[in-house]
Amino acid sequence: MLEPKDFHKTILLDPAEFALRIAGVRKAMTEDDSRPQALLLCDFANMFDLTGRVFRGWVYIPLEGDVICFVQRPLILRGENTVAVRKPEEIPAHLCDRLPATIGLELDTASWNEVKRLKALFPDATLTNASAVMRRARAVKTPAQIEQIRRSGISHVRVYSRIPKLYRDGMTDIELQVEIERVSRLEGGLGQFRISGNSMELFQGSILVGENADTPSPYDFALGGEGMNPSLPVGANDTEITPGTTVMVDMGGNFTGYMTDMSRVFSLGEIPETALKAHQTSIDIHRMLQVAGKPGVKANELYEAAMDMVKERGLEQYFMGHTQKAGFIGHGVGIEINELPVIAPRSRDILAKGNVIALEPKFVIPHVGAVGIENTYYVDNDGLKLLTPAPEEIIKFDL
Image 1: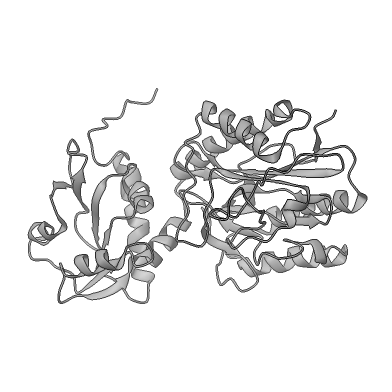
Image 2: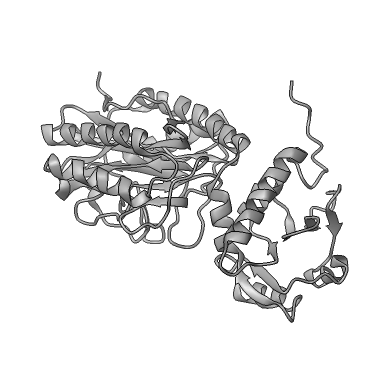
């Protein structure tokens, strides 16, 4: 039986897990070309990764010595490595004159004013980008993190298993999405879709019906959709689900703070043979890459292997979009939906044991819709291990 957590403690991870994650960050620091001597972090995703909670404040990680959590809010937090502060200008006084010569700040996510204010705490230090260091560190998950993702996957699959019974005649894409969101929240879904940077926005997930799957979006997603309003131009657009079209469900699976990413396809009535062929090709790509995706393999080689199969089957014009194509077939996933590694033709990433990857080789068939599946896997010594074990065939609503 698990011991109850003391939620007044700043660090909710057990000491061994905390040490393992800090060791991973320090390894990434030493491997970075800028060689930062310390990081000062305030991004919520990084904070959750390192402490098991989100708080307002900063986490200071030196290459050597104690990690210190400087907490502004909530005021109830306490424990080892915790210092209460009212403002960041109080931080240097707690570092015992051991100010780093090189300091890493989160240049990808912090505002310019935040960066200026925090850099002023270390006036003689060289500034480097902690965001890049943390992305590399977080790309390799610990066994405990993979278990959190596995738990999200179990709930994610359970929600998808209920989708056929949610459909009603005359339903639109947004009506179906609302029902799925309801089931997900009742299953324990957090309703949060964490994304790094400003390359995309999304509310819980996406449902694409028929021709809307071919509508280009400005965001860096595998597929687009018009959306309900120009302020969020992606996903469902109130299209009715009609015979002969597909319904691609790509809803986020955040049940533990760590996400799984999964897409499945449903249909009403019969769909053309080309769509069925493309869907089976997606499944076959998954099976091939599950075997090939081992530590040390280049991410771009996985992309090329998938593309070779697509070309052999004459489906290139539909692959990863029709009117507008995505430039990748997979991405890392964890606390955020767009982590490393990226499975793309120009990717320099190399797979490592502990990576968690969402593979999404998809197709858009004009006048029919999107087909193909997305699964989340973790990289093990002998290949990719599935974390989203749901049925992969196209499921008919009218059976």
